Amino acid sequence: MSAGGRTGVNVRRLTPTEWPRAFPVIAQLRALDEAEFLQRARRQAHTGYELVGAFEGDVLIGVMGMRPVHTLARGAHLHIDDLVVDANARGSGAGRALMDYAEADAQAREMTAVFLDAHPDAVPFYERQNFALHRAPSMRKLISR
Image (tube, rainbow, N blue to C red; front, side, top):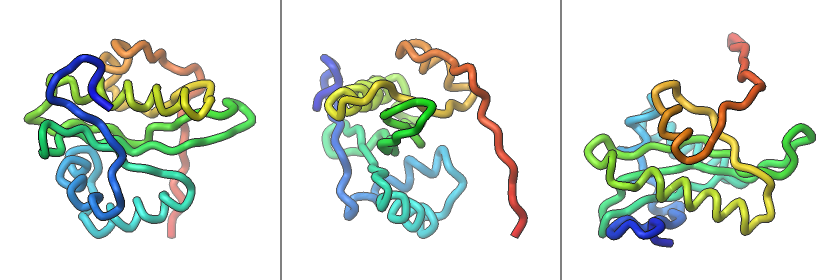
């Protein structure tokens, strides 16, 4: 899938053998070493998690992790767990291309929405993609081991 009229940026699902290529980009968002990243991605893949890459030529410049979800509160929707564009490629259209891909994928699956958790600095980007802040706050409680 091309980037909605943007030349040079192409988006596609990554095969599991390509996941190590995604690590340098994901590492700009998540504080994980490569082994932990791959272990978590493989574990999540059992419940539908996929990695999608944005490419300029053969260079991977953006990565998105997404998964189909069905809940009582939200119905069938696509959840974006991770979206990051390499710092040197920001402004290239890769982020928008990844978002377009997610929306098209959700529509193809007959889902009702796309949800994500946004870093506060990224909220303006998502708002430009017509996302709105959701009224339900995310909360967590860490469980000690």
